[in-house]
Image (cartoon, rainbow, N blue to C red; front, side, top):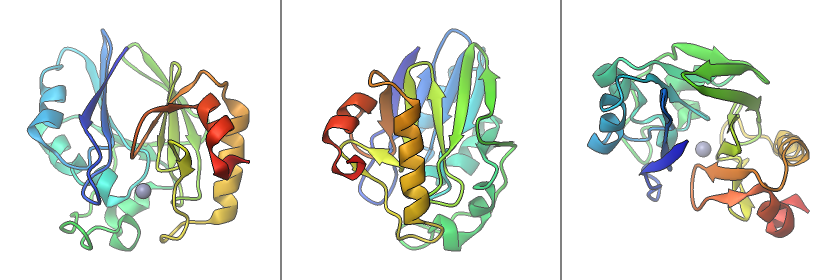
Length: 206
Ligand SMILES: [Zn+2]
């Protein structure tokens, strides 16, 4: 499995966007913008099973999703309790720092602890509210795509609409309890880290 950084998170415009590639699957995680780079990742892998996978519906993670789907006909998946925010600007925060995102729906909604397959990739989803109402973390092999819940030595904000500090603590406890030190964490912003590193150095987890 190869993981590419298709968009390196840029200030308030877009988050990290990852491209996951195997022999039989091509997945884009959180396309905050539909750049040529992001679109080409899916266009160059039409022989594989493809998916646009979203951790949570903040504008910097979904801003390019609709255009990407229109250009590639690849379907969009998001957490069941987060889908509403794709078409609710009060929750996706679009129109403040970037243009308003036209409302759209997902093609698939995912439930907590759901396990599903894309080509030769098995994805396990964990609903981790706190940063948003129904944000998800996705475990793929030994890699956790954590959205804006867990970052390198910090954690996500809980003061935005739908945020909740108690839920965030529960979500963090759950993730830290579930996963071994070796699990790599690909977050929405900043550098890749590991569960072990965060257990040791993340002040919010003590
Ligand atoms: Zn966010």
